[in-house]
Image (tube, rainbow, N blue to C red; front, side, top):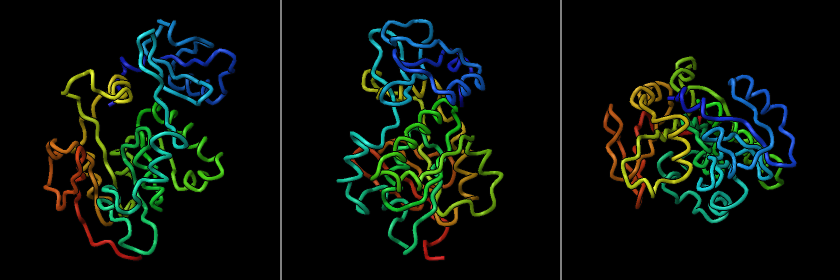
Length: 270
């Protein structure tokens, strides 16, 4: 759940030489976040984290000299771009889990725990139409900026059109939707990290600080099972316990990750 105490530790700022865009000023007003103007995050200590407009795009940036680098939704460079070009297509574990290729028409998928949108982007590259649900308004803003930058790229424009972002609590949103809400509903709940804190990815650290753990994962799974046409897919660490509820019908396992698949009906053409 969104942590009220964590959100109070966030301010909205921009890089020196930039002017804060009106939409981020409006977001700050809606969330009652202070706007601190142009700052250098390394030398700013007024808040633990900044929603920071940089030359790269909108980022989540922890403050202080020893803080990790910015957390950004970037679909044009690095890991996302490499995976788009060399990711293995339908041979990827996620493709097998959601059932890509089992019908001639694209799947309609809801990513109910979108985060930075990395899995949703992969699903879009596989041809799916993806609605991304993100309940943290701050994380949704970073994700929105990433999709917008993707839409301005000649090669990425089509993929951006396959990704529709909705800022909403997934359990609440799904409850208002007709049945079925999508062909496949995809979940990647965030749980408290119990390993060596030095190994935690910087985005996970930022997200857990900001939004806390997904304590309602069992409730979300139950709601998803009511609203999916063909299957619900849950991404989990390979050795982690399954979410409380029915046992998965299929488990697709990789080196560090597995996908628990709950089959409702065989995937077929409309």
